[in-house]
Length: 180
Image (cartoon, rainbow, N blue to C red; front, top):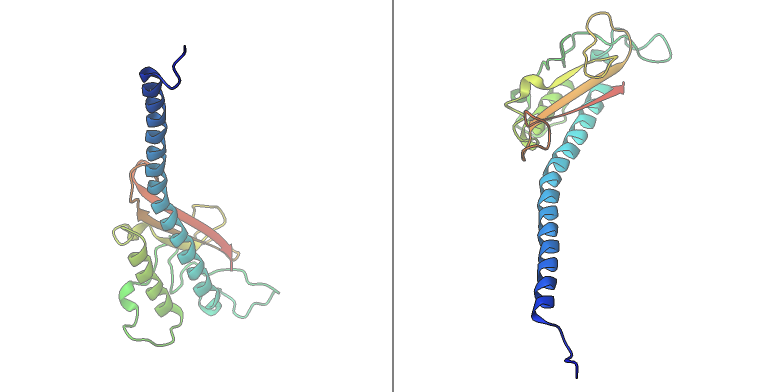
């Protein structure tokens, strides 16, 4: 007569297989959490860049050489503005943001924006020299003096919260270009 049930060896093999599967799931969960932090920071950078594009778009008088435009569209961005210089270096500081609630315009809005960048992106204040706003006809390059057009590129940088999520130097970069 045959005994019904499982032998001890069968039970041990089943436990080992299930354990290997559970360890794999735990490692997958840890990796997922690691990348979720950087995705959150990247989404914050996208939102902040969009906000700066809105600030620049609302202040065309200080951005373009000819205001209002002669043609049916804007072109010929200034290489030096109240917002940036010809190399993309920002020309405002977070200290220019008023401490009280009032309607803000132009450079004051940009200064408050910079405050939010420093508050919301880890390590951005330490990497502030890499934050750029400039006219650009090629991704990653400021156009310089010879540029005519209305394309602007903004680059934000921050320190990665986890190793190996943004490159060898653990500095994350996000750039976007838009026609103003």
